[in-house]
Length: 427
Image (cartoon, rainbow, N blue to C red; front, side, top):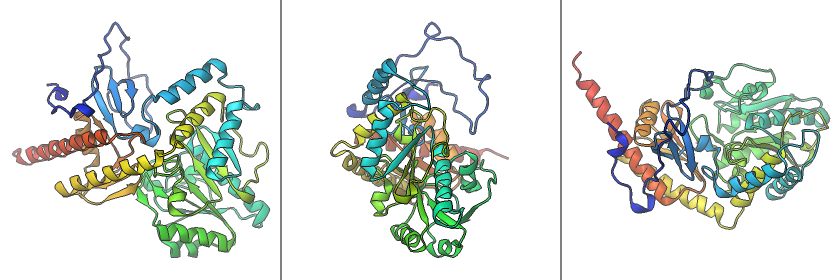
């Protein structure tokens, strides 16, 4: 039975795009057995094309994507501005080498600093590397300005990436794959200013936080908490590091989430959406935190010409007049729709900001819902057993949001029917 042919027709404005199946003549049969297992199990679909909020598999089935690679594809799949920038740059220069400048690298660093009010920027391949760089930079600052202080305070259930240093700053619970790492880190409850203050001592060099804890289930910092952390850092003479790998580049309805909270960090990490799908991250520093010397942050292909072209294309797009207002409007529409659906199916709170939202479930059925949604042609993500996460393209339309809500409702109905059938099966 082809479930895709049983779905109700979508409104004309959001009718499911069509894509012809890839036949044997088009491509050879590909084996999954040669792919080494990674950090998580992959779905069985083989995707061949993407456009905006949609993906197509090799059977011609269309999927509405509300994960976008975990907020990586900030402008959606294969946006024309990014595709054009990459194509043009690839014909001119891809990678001059780590020891050399390119025009694109210098242009991107300059644009990042100007648009964020930063003094220096360093380009990397991933958010984990950016967080690793932030740790190194803070400890170098501690050597220069705080009598060799090196200790960094982070929040419980934080997830700052998967390099050794970033894992050390993370909590093992949300990732389910983080191992105890390097010394020099301590973790305190998120949104608890008193607990954080009590942990600071003469060894402390920085406080490192996510404005919204994405992997923990999209848990936002309260305004009072983040403002209080900033004040504490200023009073005690330590650094504030904000991990904006998931919340930056427009995800929260502003270029940086710190702007929505009215705070200013000393060091910021960016990743995911900065490259729009191309591996690209950045480490931003302000004031005396700009203390790195050549060779201290290391790197290989960081900020090559091709990656820099992608970053410039993304920045040019999100900094267009009215873009962030559109993100905020779409986010409100998504939040309101999720709240109605949560009420209809007896689920928990909807929380988040901009176009990063979570639906708290009453039971640990998130993975089952993800699978039910997949049958409805909807791609979702479950960072926790009882949480669904929504990180659509920043360019997502209201029509796509409404279509997602319809498919999610059908996924709930499908799961409830399955649970009912299981209960009725005789022992």
